[in-house]
Image 1 (cartoon, helix red, strand yellow):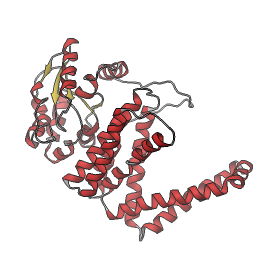
Image 2 (cartoon, rainbow, N blue to C red):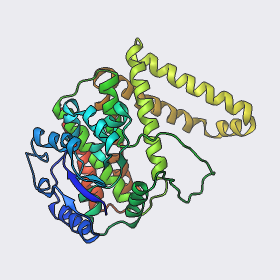
Image 3 (tube, one colour):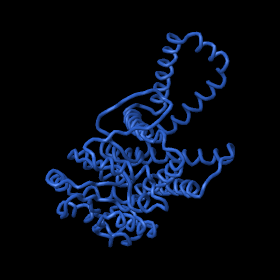
Image 4 (spheres, one colour):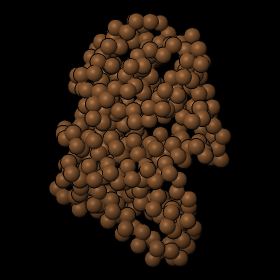
Amino acid sequence: MPQFHLIAPSGYCINQEAAQRGVQRLLEMGHQVENQTIIPRRMQRFAGTEAQRLSDINSLTTLEGENTIVLAVRGGYGASRLLESIDWAGLAARQQQDPLLICGHSDFTAIQLGLLALHNVITFSGPMLAGNFGALELDAFTQDHFWRALQNPTFTVEWQGNGPYWECEGQLWGGNLAMLVSLISVLVLGDHLSWLAWSGIGVICLSILAMAMNGRMQSRKGIWLALLNACFIAGYTLVDGTGVRLSDTALGYTLWTFFMNGFCLLSWAMVARRREASSYLCLHWKKGLLGGVGTMGSYGLALWAMTQAPLAVVAALRETSILFGALIAFVLLKEKVAGLRIAAALGIAAGAVLLRLA
């Protein structure tokens, strides 16, 4: 029977009741749960001091016991502050000799991607103690996929959808989009962020995750496609951030980008579907022109911002569009906004304020 070893490298677990409920569930399943003393540990908004949280990670190099699952208590913010001091080589050596099953998501993404990038160490982007095992009702979908992923040498993800059939295989880089862009911009572009900026990014990450969890309670279709789309967004954000900084002006880069996109798309439409495209343009050219100007203006502002501020900050602030989407859904579409959705929206707004103060 696998045993669980808890770590808390990120934020303080505000919902202590949920964490204890998660521990109790695991115990009832017959598992041992080690290192429970870290659950109430706190230093301001973090799950302990920098030294304590770093010790949670580096002590894994000498952790005794077989068949051990390392489970993060929660995400939030704080893991990225530890990256420079983590014993990456020691962790990699441990995983080669006696692998631990390391599991978490959200802010923990930073550590997981570090292990993958530096030493090709596989971890699991999956449930955490408080938010998942400690939920009021244990999600059957999460539990089933968690154990299937851990207990099988290969893992196939399948779901029912209305789209065309397709298959893909390869190395999956999962995680939180804002955290992905933050890490890439720091490593590749040499951006340096203050602790307040990292705090704002962390708050936005956590709030977006809460918004997604609220929606996933009703439907999980497309969750893997959404993660794949997040990777593509992170990719083109990095490309655009690099391109606009190398160009003479943000305006020139913006105009050339939209001209080439529009020219290529229009050329293809005229070759492949001339009649339908011509008819559509004649009927909707005014709306298309208005939408095109608006799109170019909004993204042009984002590109200009990338020349004035760190890419990670700009990318995180762009994700506040979810907040405006929630407002539009409530005001115009008359959708019901649940408590978790309201809290997530306020969190996104708070993260934006922190980034403004950074």
